[in-house]
Image 1: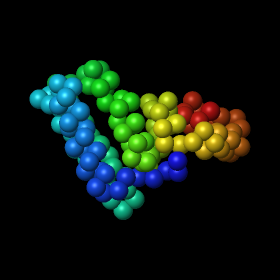
Image 2 (image 1 turned 120 degrees about the vertical axis):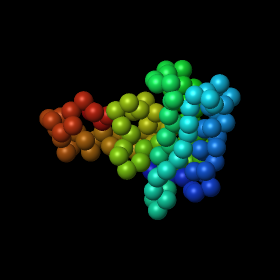
Image 3 (image 1 turned 60 degrees about the vertical axis):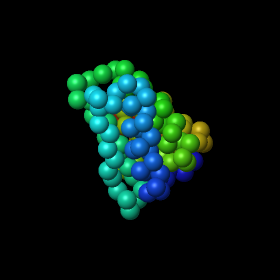
Image 4 (image 1 turned 135 degrees about the vertical axis):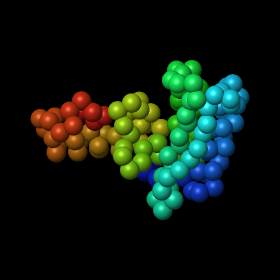
Length: 123
């Protein structure tokens, strides 16, 4: 898939689906979900906060569900900042293997010594 965001109605749908997921998983009283972002380029920042602190069960209930939902909507799980260090195993949900291979080739070509952002997503 090419990198692309979600249409505005799908953005609202994702926030509502996330809230429904949180409720179904028993987190409705201890979490809040909101979406904000860049409507012009269709990037949504989904913000899920826990009112009781870090909860690994909460994270497990959202990942990979969230990334699969976005992939099913033909969106991309990386936006203007890229995939990030914590989510590279989900990159295949929004990028084809040939696109990932091309990214790795570009990284090796432009940074053959691995000194620019070492140990990051593309090595």
